[in-house]
Length: 359
Image (cartoon, rainbow, N blue to C red; front, top):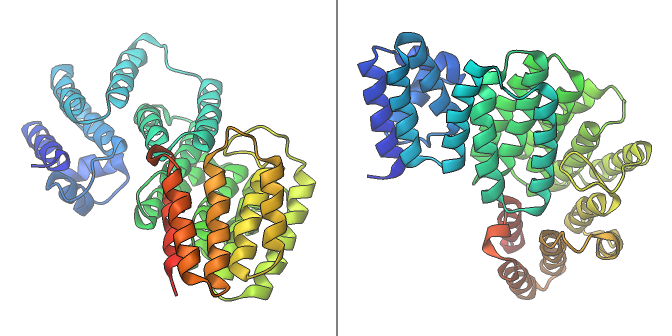
């Protein structure tokens, strides 16, 4: 019996013992009854926000002692940090020591830094812990904004586009509850760039890009920049090269209007990071400008950002494969990915290697 099956069985036992229905849990989890049924059967992963929904539903129906059983089940099977945060939050709520909105903003910015430098596994564990706690604190538009941006980053740490899109949809719904246009633009734009850069789910990437661009209404923000870059990549992957180039020109104008600083976080675009996105776009388009952007990355990338060496090397491998040296491009790409420690690899890199291997 795998961990998901074991936890699903125990959650079902606790739910039925407390006379709680799947519909009651679904109300807090913001997902369907059928999804929760699959969770209890072990066919779906038990994400922290689902566990938290069980805790909240059982909280409404029973006393504290039964709730501690749910948390105890989590302790055996979820990341220790997530369980610790869940326990701490339960006591903090009662002692009035919950983090403020500004505290959460600082944690989110720190997670954005971690996303840029650490591997997906590390970031996912930290985000799982924070989202587990944050679900209890979404009592204001500001907190929904924080949750939405956290969910969008979490989507980037998942194993495949399908799971990522589910998180982007949750993030989109949370951003809508925030009643904050900039949060809505950022979430939709981040989803567009993530999917567009990965060459995955192109129609969905375009839809998110158009949504963000429409909401931004020309106001230059990092969310609009994300959307324009994502749209350019999705168009390039769809064979619409001229539209992709025109959209990249829009992105360059937005980048120049933003004048971003050198802070390394997922919420900021220093020049070297913008150049990484340009490198892959022009490699996909078969443009010689790709070499210019790759040189810019090499010249300006901070030494600590070793993961992005692999990004650019895979872009070069794609150019080799597309120019006729298929075997050489594949070999170059495989060697580049192998040179990066496994805990630093991401979904984007694996999807990029798959793209190189396509004839």
